[in-house]
Image 1 (cartoon, protein in one colour):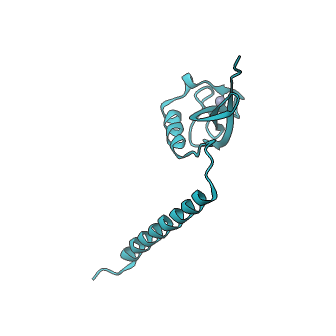
Image 2: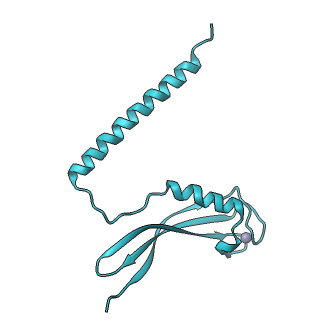
Length: 126
Ligand SMILES: [Zn+2]
């Protein structure tokens, strides 16, 4: 028999002060926690599926997904895109160096473009 466990790996918690709680309608009290689904069999397998839970400090309740309003849903979708998932795929030293070079390379391009942009705006118009 194969044993399968589903775990929710904790990723991070973000406060959502700009939105009001759909249950008690108070603002500045909600927190959204993100989890990544992990399927545990003989060897642990991480999926890229991300779930989130929202709790409110004011009413002390967890807001069920069905009670999320449009804003909360939008917040979740935006943050979900930016979140880094944990993959069980391991990269070797060579891969890490390549990634590092790529990061520096794109970082340099970004700085160059930002510099040009700022320079273009600082230049007095003739
Ligand atoms: Zn509340």
